[in-house]
Structure formats: C-alpha cells, structure tokens
Length: 177
Image (cartoon, rainbow, N blue to C red; front, side, top):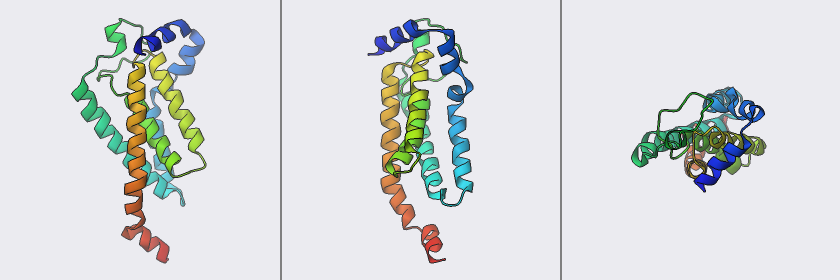
C-alpha cells in the first residue's frame, strides 16, 4: 500500500498539482484550523463546538506528535527513497501523519456533533491528507493511522468530554440565564 502511494505521487507529478497540493493552505493547515477554532470561540452559539475542537486538537497533538511518532520512529518516505520535496522538509518522524490526525480530529468533532459544516471540514481533512502523500512527506499508512487517530479522539471528545461539559457549571449557568 505504501509503495502504491509513492508510485501514484510520482506518476501524477505536475506543476499544476504542485501548486494545488503544495500551497500554503495545505502546508499551514494546522494554523488555519487553530484560527478557525479561535473564531468559533468568539462567536455566540459556536463556543461549545470550539471548546470540543480545541480539546480534540490538543489530545491528538499530544498523542500523535509527542507520543506515537517518537515511540514508532518511522522514517519519512523522502528520506528512505530519496524523493524530491517541494515544501520545507519535516524533521519529525512519519507515523502517524500529524496534519491528517489533527485535520480529522477537527472534522470529526463537526461530524459527531452533526454540525452543518461537517462536510466542509471532512473535505478539507481529505484534501490535506492527500497532499501529504503527494508531497512525499508521508506514506499511505501514515495517512490511515492519522485518520484513525483523529476520528477516535474526536469521537471520545464529543461523546465523553462533551457530555461532561454539558453538565458542567459553565453550561448550567448559561441555561439558567
């Protein structure tokens, strides 16, 4: 499966796709997601979603970037296969894909809360994920691992932490006013 992703990226390599997948939106996707969360925190009616997004993002970052990547220590494909990379070369390990995990953690919160923008966030997460393979910085299994991690964390965040927040003092106080 991993060699299939590498061969597909080589086959599809073009200037147009370099621009499509190597643009600042995919490269700085995590900063975009943080900015979206900040905006949601400021808007009335979206604060609960924003809090869940922030929690899922943080848990995913800690478990994926700080724990799993270092425990597994998988070398990136551009190092192993001496591939061309058109973006700044990441210095961390490969598995799981952090961009994918955090994009799907955010999208998962929107999905599992039934938010009306869930399809937009899922499409964005898929776009970011595909870009990571095209840019030769991840294997397909890194992407699948990132998707699984992000969706699992978002599910647990919405179902468990979301319920706890529902019963917290903050939300009880808001309902009484």
